[in-house]
Length: 170
Image (cartoon, rainbow, N blue to C red; front, side, top):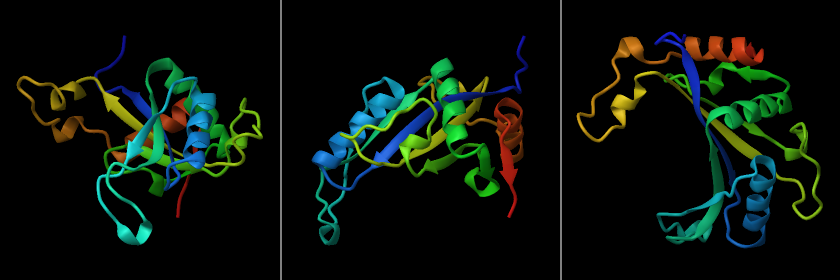
């Protein structure tokens, strides 16, 4: 039986930003599909930035979100790619954390694909507790009380216990 204070991984989001539509974006989408076996979605720009050549509704990145057991299994492999070390600064005050992987070939079980080349990706992990639904429900939406929120220290302890992560101090 789980305790109400027990943490769990709500979702993992893998993101690759290429900055332009076309061949690089297609390679990034193919890579995310290879890693996760899920179809990624393109993210589009909302603003016009003329100096960067960006206009509204221009697809410049792609992402895929995983939940449940497949997210936990993939997170273990992704953490192995960074040698199970996460600096303390990678955790935010809400207990979520993110990190980058320079080359996808560092992920165990992923082979180099000559069609894709070498690409890196970003990983964002969102943690939650039982009761966090109150901030997203439609009827009677409320805030999660501060005594029930996840702290940075709790998140670091959870990841260390579950995956054996070494937190690097500054």
